[in-house]
Length: 191
Image (tube, rainbow, N blue to C red; front, top):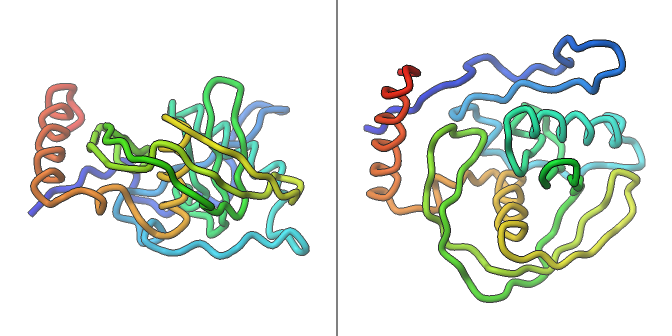
């Protein structure tokens, strides 16, 4: 049986972590075995939003940056909202109610996930995609992504649909990845 490493076994924090005044609050990540990661997220309702979409997206971005990620979904922080952010440095985009419109070609690449620290898995995904989403104002947008941007969008869209990347590999590949992760964590003193 594969042993999972748990970074945080507490449920997600629904309030912000204490930060200096004027700072954007960040969220705690749920553990990799948290049931919310296997749930399909409901559409985000801009007519009666459960949270301020701009502030929430900003907190997701800051949380993603804090953990040195390229993408982060709301459910990874324990929130049942259909939204994720993706980007790098100071160039992040919030994707509310994302949809995949068209895919092109395929590429096999190593992929990681903030919900599964230190676990690299080789996943086959479309190399280029056409997408639709709403920005934090609820305005519909379309985009074409390729390379790491396409991969990140698809990884986060999977989160919105209750799919974790560990389910996209064969059992032997997952077992091998878990062994490598456990060895690395032991080497750096986390296990």
